[in-house]
Length: 130
Image 1 (tube, rainbow, N blue to C red):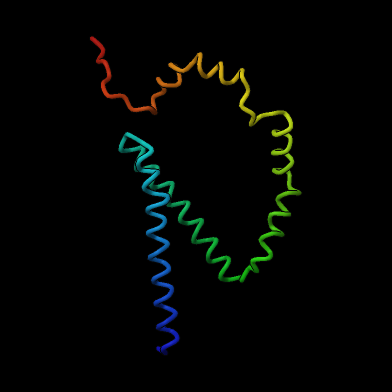
Image 2 (cartoon, rainbow, N blue to C red; image 1 turned 135 degrees about the horizontal axis):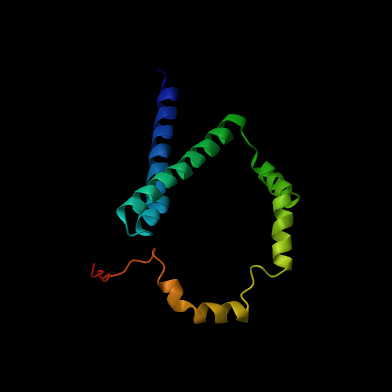
């Protein structure tokens, strides 16, 4: 094995280690802390593995096809002319994302219903007398 190969393997190894630490700190830890039940936490970690796979896939695609960074602007241009961009524009036009007074009043009126959702952890749960 030549000196160049050793340098290449060292760079790849260090990059993989940095990427794994970044994935753990930026994806897995927030996913774990977002849930209360153990099974939900485990499922969140499993789902975050898909994010890791997407990162690896994008990196390998970039490495194999050597995408020119200038081409990224073209990709955004393709999105701008896609059906998804048209849908986003229509949603903006009808005010889908706007925070209206009606929505604020509804949320304030039904605040207790939002707080009672099962995904919010409770300190004590009353036991039924059965």
